[in-house]
Image 1 (cartoon, rainbow, N blue to C red):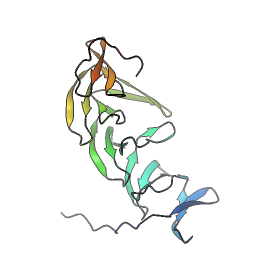
Image 2: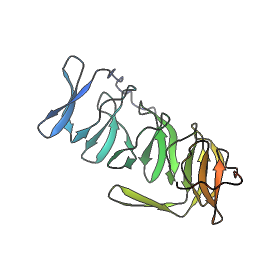
Image 3: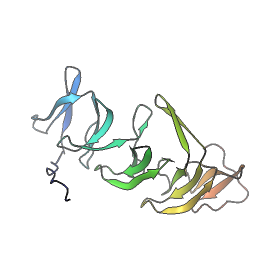
Image 4: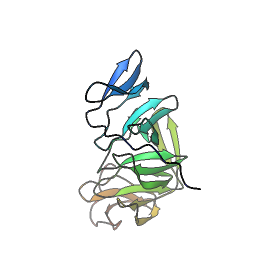
Length: 195
């Protein structure tokens, strides 16, 4: 069965949020209301034509028609920030990545994933995420690496993998700390401090 046609997305350049009482909406560059004040909180539209807002169900990213695109991963009281052009979103209990237009670039198929750095993101298969308010911890499972196309570069075989910086990341395999490169290979002679 074909999908129903959706309204074309309007250009949102110059749109600004405005408050009406306790609610937020959007006006175009001429000051005309284009999305009525119905959101509890709103971030401005990205150059790609997407804004993240709070509706009755929490944070959601919308297009210029107000249509929901996805639910962003919440980090530090708000939507995940973009890193290397991608941010995390949640679908069911899984995490994927989207771009500034709100297009899902990497499907939500990971139990957890870290933001991209140095062209890599660490992901976890089989881990459990436990959250209290906006703070979450992850336990169990195995960690691997993906590139920005979502291709698995390193299979989920590590106990932990941290965020990359300068081409290397802290990792743990079989309970032993080590430093790995972007291909998951150990870098001999150094164990990076921190995450």
